[in-house]
Length: 367
Image (cartoon, rainbow, N blue to C red):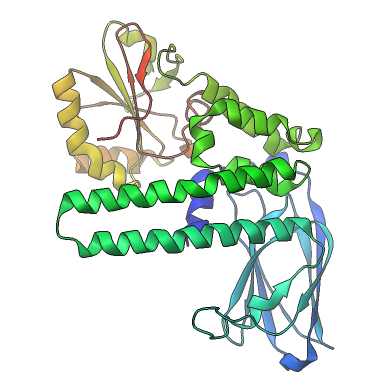
């Protein structure tokens, strides 16, 4: 769920940019597993429409099974699922022919219990598969430790201690950053490196755009010139222009009444850009604090919605008594040019404060 959440939050609909290519997955099954005629399922997560949604199934025949289909780009976090025991294996499926094997199931090193049939699925010699396995193990290791912080936080009755423990958990997660960066530096021609920079990007690189650009420029030209590479280049360019002390990029957007609103129209006033959406629970929960802060600091709030549906947008404004802000939206979700390219919004809620002269004085306000 943790991996799937990250994908949903950070991936955008760019399927039209890709040419389809065929894939074949041939898997040999160890006869000692006695899986003849057993069913396996292959599922592609619909990564923001990068790849078509796939839900395929085959039976084991003569100690092997074969999946075939088409994809637009390597299908990160494809799932292979065993019908017999429900176990699953997440992996990266690439175009062309992949030769996989099923041996005996792996065991949990702590409990000694088998992890399920699908745990032993591997694609020998596939560097993408190997690197994603390393990445997964790294994340699993740190997520396991973070869960301990959260358990301690939930068991405490003092809010201050709860907040301190949760902050500690996020700082602990950042310890994986140097390992991910090393993986990227050592594998400049591997698609996994572009994927990690684009979607699994270490927090360190979100804060240090210079290092992000350095790593991107270190990738092979074929990756940089791919559609995903070009999109990441736009993100880097946007990040370079969203910094404290820089002029806030100007834009025009329609308000809830259809009137065009320009950011520069508010020159002479302190402005808070609040990026939110009707479906974003943390955004809604943040509204009381946001209102109190805006009134105390005498800020004009421009609430930029990442909604697609106009009715949902307007209904949320009414239901949550959010009528004290000026509401505007591209109604294109994460794909809006201003949201995606101009301000590089990758998570919400996100608040940017702009002074009377149009300069950004805070780019990620936390309340």
